[in-house]
Image (cartoon, rainbow, N blue to C red):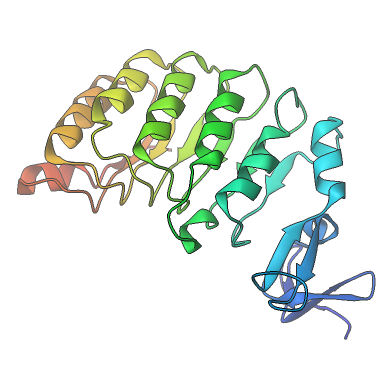
Length: 235
């Protein structure tokens, strides 16, 4: 079946790439060649997309073909996501990470994704935008990511919605007190406790670079704190 175009570079309905069926979802056309579709039971434990060798090769060889790493909503487990992100070590071509909506579909597992991301953000590269929403990144790795961002001078946008930052308010605050590059931070639904929220909000108030901040649906007790967690948008 020939693909039907909507707006931009996305297919509507059944997708195909070079005549091969590629699943019933909506993904950018330029990403299709980096993934193969598998059927549960016949080819894989789960129905869905898996990255192929072309993706790993493009990332590890620093190919200019991938400026935006788009792995959103692929339902990949932490091991697979960790392997993909590890390929960014030494990569200077990728400027944006769109990797939301993967690990949260799986049962509890090691945080390969979080560890790999922390290592990448500790390196010198050209990544300026990171969307890791809805990936079940755990508290320990949140701390590692915040530590990496203390010295990172490239990342301007960080979307961490729907992860686990409980007890890491001090780490987030320390990062904000040190980092002078970040302009946008999303911490919605991160299980931040009341003390965490207070620490983060105090650091946000001190920040001279943040233009966008949001942290609603966390465990703040007071009405005033919950109101402040709605954040602001000065972009």
